[in-house]
Figure 1: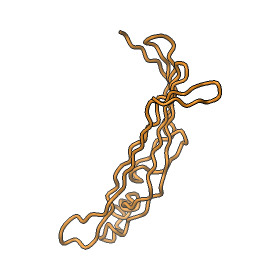
Figure 2 (figure 1 turned 180 degrees about the horizontal axis):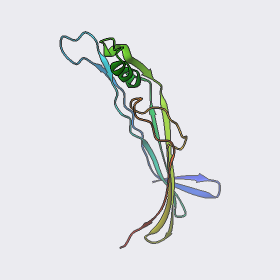
Figure 3 (figure 1 turned 90 degrees about the vertical axis):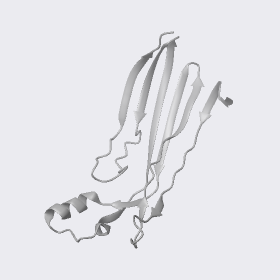
Figure 4 (figure 1 turned 45 degrees about the vertical axis):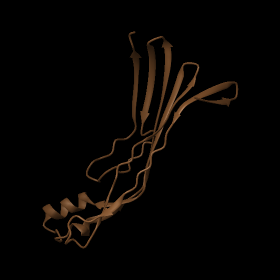
Length: 150
């Protein structure tokens, strides 16, 4: 545990983590002459459990660089609209990079009883996380109580 002085308080930092992933180009079959990017999903990097007098702050950051994938919206529109070109590659697009933040706070009231507030996608980003057929979730806020019995 690391002690970090902040004004009249001392933060006790228990864990800081960092995770990084990249994508790689692979070929599907030996006779295939083209490659495609295999996106590898990032996981949030936790920065959690900064404790100040029974209060725990949590946070996570997920960042994904640009990646190439099929524009499924255009692909299916062409496929079912009769304008399909015969090549899926004609429908590849570069999806934009995105960064999303999660934050939370937990306050212990008594031994075994605490309240929490968790905000996922705190920046309310609607950037696509996988493909453009699935509408991304906006900001999600959860408020609750935790009760633990001994």
